[in-house]
Length: 221
Image (cartoon, rainbow, N blue to C red; front, side, top):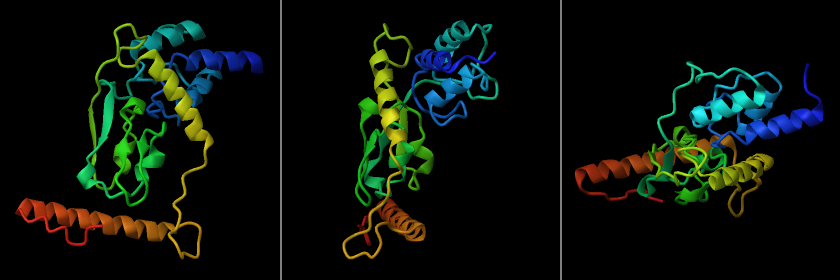
């Protein structure tokens, strides 16, 4: 029998408390809270959270009353927490990574260099695939204190990730504003893509210049 709404809310809360809040989507849900709700309603299995590891698996088995399980074999095992880092000299300021980050750990503005707030980064790696310059590095993250619930995440960090994600998903997607004198409040998708392609070409030229030892920065922004 499906739990009542109050019971379902409490079960979701208890499940979510044992997810490390990386918001990595590897469970096939857009955020940890959505995965918790899916488990609570019986839609999802409890073994789809690689960052949580055995700590999360064991806890979810206890909470749901299910037998212990191993990680779903269709999901790539976790190899340790990562820390995103923008390679500054290659960043073109395209802003694509800003919305991709589920906890707003990346700051910057269009056509300006972006940077990662290390204390906010969950290591989800969602920023890297959207970067057209491949200028986001994913480094091993230093370990939190051994007293933490998880090996890779301190409890205080997890609570911060949960709060930041809630704010991120409550906000509408970021909209790029047009410059002074523009007739529209936003820049069209085609114009945006053209700008990104032009910026990519500029950085590629600079890379070629550096390889030749000239670095003329022809056409640099």
